[in-house]
Image (cartoon, rainbow, N blue to C red; front, side, top):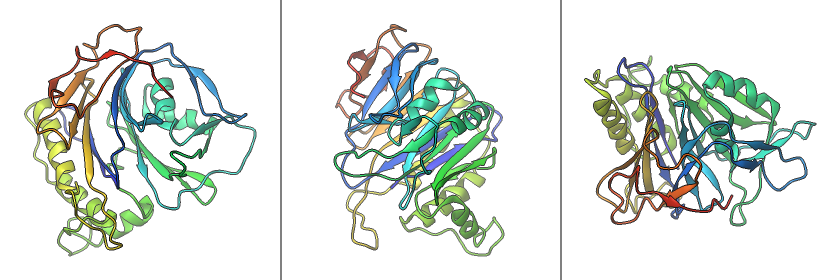
Length: 311
């Protein structure tokens, strides 16, 4: 399970962080992808094709698709698990798979408003990953502070668009998360913030502490702020859910949308690594690194090596 937190209203830097929580490692790779790549929306006959318009730095899941990243214009996108997520009925629009959605957005759009308008022209379909269909909902945000959350529910794509949509977790859907949030202070209710690892509790806790973050002095403090919140919503190894399942946090990411810097903290390492999009090597070459490698700490902008993107 996962949590996404966007600090959209501080005057220093628009910053976002998210956790990746799952039963097993998603075996992430960190990629730097140039503009000009020929891409496909999946294997089906209706899959759309495109040439990437914008460069990006992203994390992949099982080398099957992009789950998180930022592009050169400061637009970031994230895929999070949503139990019961559906798909829209077939129509004449071209399709993108759940694993390609994030990359399609980063490749084609520079702002949230562009993406909200442009994504109406494609339909999301599910293709199995390691034999499983994984439901997902998606969050995007940009350097202006704009935000949107996309949820495929009951045969339609529900879009929540506005700077106020700053927190996202897993099930239930956003409307129900927000209704639950109003039971807690300072969001209309009297309950104190909860401390469990359930999606509902993580959503409330992230919203609560985001509300009280003090104004940062610089972008460094802004990034540190959302990383602290993501750490507070993280799940330690071995912590069980009520159903007995264990879904620890494997990594945290953060993106400074104002300054175009992408950060990753792997649960295998004691420190952060980061990539400055302005300092990545060749603008025409796909490069990658393993963010869980023992030496992957610090500024990794020059460490990425040429690689073949498998999806």
